[in-house]
Length: 498
Image 1: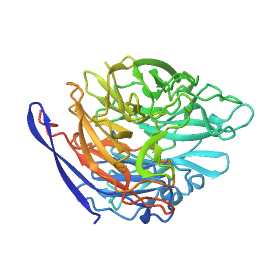
Image 2: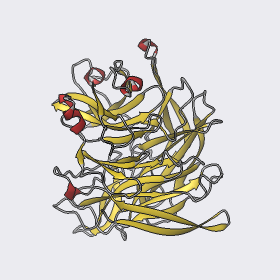
Image 3: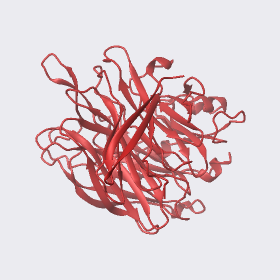
Image 4: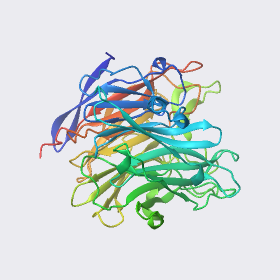
């Protein structure tokens, strides 16, 4: 069994001392994978019986109680190869694993690349919530994306950074449109609805419904300031109201005018799908005004460069090695909970917090709605409890009692990249309490890239326990890949006591 660690932390809250226990154990590390990659993009999800972790392009399931892995890491393409879906035999990175809490099923997905310029999105759905079951089978699907992402000149944009959300009427997929002929800039976004109802029963799904913004991919586009959509993903087992449209969010980056560094808005996207009459489906964007923020590592003179997070290791000139904050976008997940009297949507991102320095912290937004109208900004905040550590690469979720928790990476000129989380109560808007998950003891020296995202999810059984996965190093990574991942869980002690 992989090494596990229980760490008891104390914090003050509600005028009395409470104990907060964080349990963590080793996830996949690079030495376990037959095909090693620098870019691991760790993500995962907790189900009824297991926790499943994904790194590009493998997944591994762990017993939720003992933390013992069910098997060695499994190639994410295996279910598709077993079922004869040749266009999904190879993934182009950015894979993911999710748990459909409304149906109690596992989902693994990624974009297939059978040949240059041919893009598919591949989705596998389990027939059970138990990945150790002898009757486990996967329902597999491949969706051809090219008709949606090709411009009038016949050029097909690359569907980058795909994200996936579970909703009542569909699975929703989002991605950026990258112009591979123009420095890989994002020129727009795509959003797709997949027929969840038929996919769950191994049926033939209705054709996917796809929208892009710009509505028709341009022959030559300009840099999109609102790229990287995050679709709402249901937390808990209470579905959205019947007929409720799906909502998505994206950042609104500052204008690229070489002087503006702040933004005062994010974008809200509404996707209405009609499976009976597809011409009635709509996809619209509106703007939400929010408190002013500067995206993480953003500098007016070089807006595309988002790496400024320092590590202790220094270069020959005395400057410190930097890694990427991925501060130019909102980060998954857009966690949705239906509390009956209101709906809550939570999302987070990396923001600049230092006035005279480039220090980064975690910005978050809560949107709310009464279940019929478009959600609006209810509250927001920043997690940055000191003036030394850079906090970045967040993922946020919410338990059944309205406690929010966000996990993230940390680093500074004196501390190696590590993993932490913070929690607070949304109803009382309490001060976030930070928890240490894993201290790092090594730096990444061979690249500025530090994954692309992480994931925080909540146990669908107790509705309280947060589960988080992220990466770290035990020694400096130079010419040989040497990354590790850590999976942690914790709960707010008062959750479920009502």
